[in-house]
Each structure stands twice: as C-alpha cells, then as structure tokens.
Length: 186
Image (cartoon, rainbow, N blue to C red; front, side, top):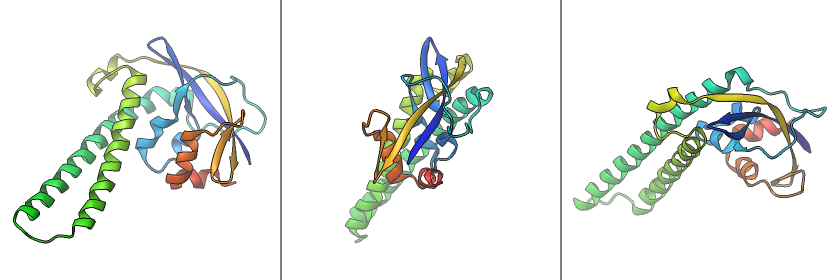
C-alpha cells in the first residue's frame, strides 16, 4: 500500500525542516511527534491521492512551541517518576523487605524507556528550535514555507520510502504506536 504523506516545510534560524502534517496529529504519545521532523529533501508538490494535511501552516508555530512545553514537562515527570521508583525500591531492599527483584527490574526498564523517549524528543526540539529551555521560545520565529510530500509503502512489517529504503522512523512507529497503526489503515 502506497501512502503520500503531506509535510509542512518551515524555517527556523535560517535552516529548513519539515514536519509530517498528517501523522503528527495521530500519534498515541506526544513525545513521538518530534521524530516526525526531518530535513527537507523531498518534492514540494502535492500528487493526486495525498493524505489531507491535519496540521495547517497557520497552526505550525503554536503547535511546535506547545509541543516543546509539553515534552519538557513530560521529560521532567518521567525522570522524577523513575527516581521515585528507584528510591522506594532501594529503601525496601535496605530494610531487607523482599519486594520481587524481577518485577522492580521490569518496572525500572519501562520507566527508563519512557524517560529516554521523552528526553530524545526534547533534544530534537531543542536542536530544531535552537533553544535550550522554554523561556527562550518567545524569541523563536518559525516561518512556514508551504507543503511537500513524502511517499511511503507498507511492506509486511516495514515501511519503505520511494527509493525502496527502509524508513526507520515510520517502521519504528508502526511497531510501537497504536495511533499510527490505526491511522495507516484505510
């Protein structure tokens, strides 16, 4: 199945990027949206049969800045949650209370994964927007420059681009994000 995905091209600090204007509104977890930002290297026209953009150019600046705020908040929360779990676990171990090593290890791995995902998302947004924290977002000017499209094909459990190369981002989303899988189904 071939899908033509709309992207919004935008400029920040003299560099051009593009964000998926369809799946960015469909993902299950907000932290995964920043993985849909990429350098512009695909055609700037809409072929017939393209998906309708859900993210509009006039919404882009507010969308990216809100995303930054939310991801920054989530990354702090996931890190705090993991630390709380580790402290509790260590206290129970110190007191000699058996609590189930394997269960705590699995819980820590789950919290660690969520924390890594949030931190990666924040890092991508910091790089693209050119800021380290939310205080500087007011100075960021995001200039929308129109739409482009990116063609993908779903083949088995993988997603390939027009050149037949595996798209690691979309393939990963296919495996881990329920919202993405639902949006792919016709």
